[in-house]
Image (cartoon, rainbow, N blue to C red; front, side, top):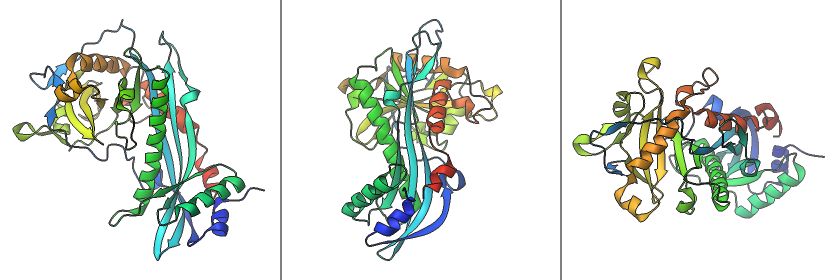
Length: 358
């Protein structure tokens, strides 16, 4: 007979006490999305040849087959399910569902379907790192043997002056990013990613896990939102992204800027997908795009302008069909990414069912 997870933890816990609490969905009730919550400095222009006026109109060639073939979205739901008393500390226990979906567009562009080999899901529990690793491994064994669903038990690092719930959520987000990396690595190993078959990842290219960067040659990151107060450039040319993009015309892109994350060099630029006069605010319909600099030449000189133009042109073509009224972010959504996001979220079990496991 299966048991609820908290009853298993209470029975088997060693060195700490597990207390019930009101179970809440942290994503809906208390916390906003974490994506783009932090930006690394982007002071240097990073394309060759450089744009003369800092922006450029992108030409669209609709009769050319799209090079955007695969679309990946990672998603998570997080919940506070209990409190732990350990070493005189009162610490949250955070549960989550994480998943990654990859969709493929057919060669004729008429069908989009999930690639189930690269769609993966897991349930997780984030404990504070004050719980010994051996005890955590034992608890995972007991939960998976006696509970209704399998869980992976994670450990988040307790830090001073940091909100503990945020740390638990960040650990679960990191697990989701690891699933994204694994999916890309497997696709690269199967030689699915090519110059004419790019993968679009929903969100910025910000991964903590180590990986071989050459596997991400044909991967772009596309963010629906960004921090308008983030400044790019330096000296007299330093400007906030909101000021830079609000005056862009439909189909224009900015120069590429260099940013570095986990010692990996990234080229970052902004593209307007929608006419300003059709939007409710000046930043609606602007997306942030990113590519890794792979070769030594790219890392030294920046990304080729022609390649940035081609990628931007194909993304601009994605502005229709839209998820208008189905998603409030419709103006910055490309429809295949919206479908990937919908697929992964519909694969989670409901909040009521998940919370009932505890």
